[in-house]
Length: 253
Image 1 (cartoon, rainbow, N blue to C red):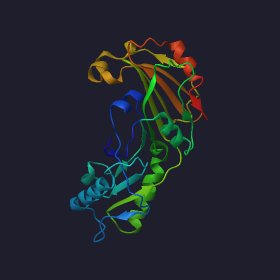
Image 2: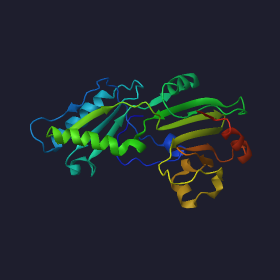
Image 3: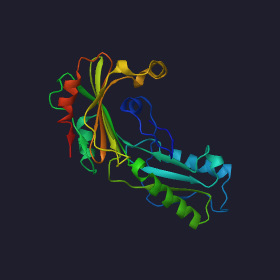
Image 4: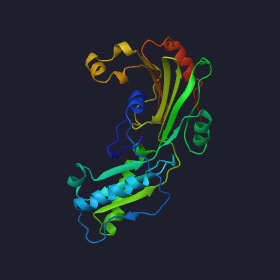
C-alpha cells in the first residue's frame, strides 16, 4: 500500500480504509531533516519533483517501519494546491500476534479479537497509523518553520511517533467478515456516545451504487478521546446484539 496523502486527512469509515489505501511506505531510518534544495528559497517544479523522487526511493521496498515524513512546498501551486504532503509506511500485519506485539509498543487503546466471536473467524489483516489527525497543525508548523528559518522552498522531515492515531483490524469467516476501527476523537466537545447501529440497507442508494465497498452494518460508539466502530458485510448473520456484546470486550486499554 504505497501512496501519498495530502495534509487534509479525512476521517473515514473502516470500510473505506480497508478498501482505499491512502498512505505511502517510508523505510529510511534517518531522523534528521532533509534539505532538498539549497540554492534558493523559492520552490520550483524541478526541486519538488526531486523531493518526491527521494521520498519515493526511501519507501521502496516497504519494511513496515512506521516511518513518517512530511514534505513542505512553499509554492503550493507546484504541489497540487497544497503546501504539505505526507509519506508514510504504516505498520501492517497479517498475523494477529505480530499486530499485538506492535500495538504493545505504542500508546493508546488496543483493539483485540472480541470474546465470543466464532472460531471460524480468522485474522486477515491489520494496520496501525500515526496520529496525523490530532497533530497535523503541530507537524506542519514545525516543518514550515524549519524550512523558512533555513530559507528553503522545498523541505522534508521525518517525524517519530509513539501514539496510535488509528487502528484497523479485519477478521473473515468464509464469505462473511468483521472489521474494527479506533481513531482519535477530533471534536472533544462532542459528548460521549452510546451505541449507534446502522444497517447496510440504510445507506443512501446513490452512495451505495458509487461505493458499494462502503456499505456495511455499522456499530459505533465513543469515549472522551476515541471513536470506535465494528462493521460487518451485508447479509452477515451477526446481529446488533452480537456486535454490542463484542464491543464490551474488544478494547484493551
